[in-house]
Amino acid sequence: MNFFRHRRRTLAGLPALALLTAVGCSSADDGASASVPSPGAKVTGLCEKLDKALPSEVDGQDRRDPTPASALTAGWGNPAIILRCGVDRPAKMGDPEADGVEVNGVGWLLEKRGDGSFRFTTTLRRAYVEVRIPKDRTADGMSPLVDLAPAVKKAIPEGIAD
Image (tube, rainbow, N blue to C red; front, side):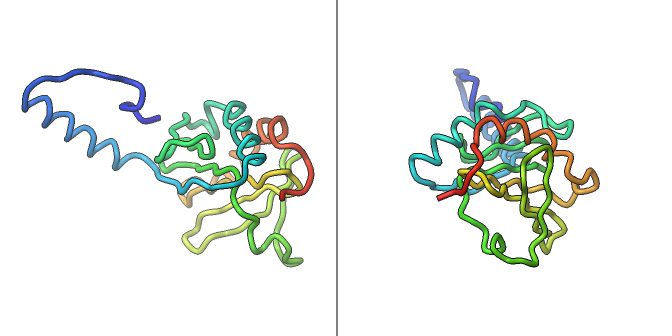
C-alpha cells in the first residue's frame, strides 16, 4: 500500500521538500505498477465487488496495491503478485493444447512466461481475472491462487465472460 496515499502532512521549508522528494522517489522504486483494464460497466461492477472481497494477505505477503490505484488491480508483496480484473480473454483460452488447473473450485488457464513468471486467468467466470506470479515467487507453486479462490468464487459468478 502506498504510504503517501493515506496520510497528509504539511511540511514547511526547503529541507522538508527535499526530504519529501527523496522519500517519494525511493518508495516508487519499491512499488509495482500494473496497467488497468477497461471492461464494460457490468464487468467493472463485478471487479469492484471482487476488490472488496480480496484478502489483505496472499501467500504470506501483505497487500500492496500497484500504481495507478484502481479497484480493478491489486497486489501483494515485493516482488508483487499482481491481480487484474476485467482483462480481455487470453488468446490461448481456446487452444486445446493450453494448460489449465483448478484450485478450490476456480478454474485457471496457466501460462508460463518467457521471464520465468506465471500468468493465471480465470476460466468459466463472468469476468476474466488475471493473476501474475513473479519468477521469484513461483517456488510456492499455486499457493496465491488458494488464497484468492474464495474471493473469486464470492464475487465473480460462474458463466462465460462477455
